[in-house]
Image 1: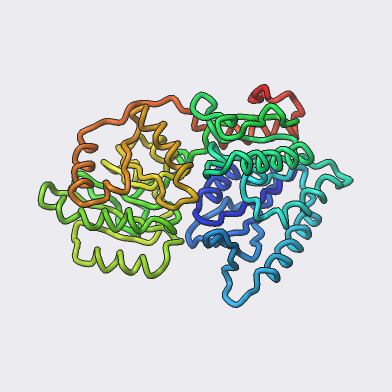
Image 2: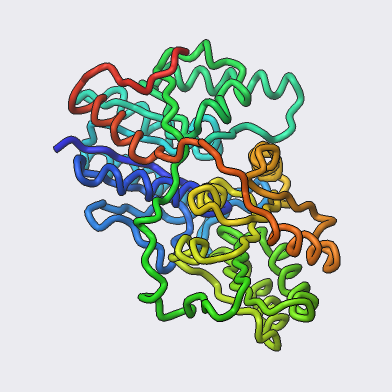
Length: 405
């Protein structure tokens, strides 16, 4: 059985981790998979049973700085340990394919450990295919023209030196790589659009099997689900939802299920708990691994606009209010995707100003009267990724998904 080693580093949210899990579910039947995770672990977040998991000493990002998750550890010591463990894992596992999640288009702060890994893979006596797994929108932060040119040139050099393929987890009819990266025609590798990676409804457990939090009650309608992805930057949105719950209760019966996210700072979650304590129409939980099950039964979803949350909305077809993250490092990526979907009538947008109680109440009431427009966006990214890698590593046939570069 061919072996695939996947490197994933989530620094702020859970998006990269969730996307990798869905891809690994499609790979597990045909490949031996080793998943190397460098970010904060998430309780109750389950990876496929057949996958070997290696946890590097965890790092997260605070502002522009990498920070060790374990208190008292120096960044230099953690970097040294991570680099050593990463190379040891490669030598022990001996993969036929190495997948780096997003790098080198982003996560350039991890170059210190990925550059030695790529060099080792390239020099291996056993041929190793090297693939970049890439989300739809990258390099969206504002940069001067000179800084953007230098960054794109660096990405191009790394891709052309090491990589056999870039797998873009997007639908080219909706979002193309050249919209974010001007040097696509200069990349000397396969450029492959897989479609968006979305969790399939069949993977969502029925709510009847969930003990905590309680399942959505069919006797209270409408039901509203609010979530903030990993939660690190979701306090403003969820605080606003709790604040508006009293006004909503005066207008109609309803129940709101709020999931704060595993990375929300403890002090922020405690403030949400205090605000929701006397709200009988609000159920607040830190995290659920069954969010998709809640969305299939909800009348409305209110969310930040991350990649995986947005795919959940597209999969379920639930009415939705989407707030692009207020975090400066994420806002453009989430705003671009959300605005495109809003222009198709698939979602409704929220702004920071819309979080005021009266405005949010109006947006909720209005959205509940609407039906989202149908869409034809390809959500088969996980299975298409597995098909491509089977062709690359097993069948050795010309992949059918390749876009001309």
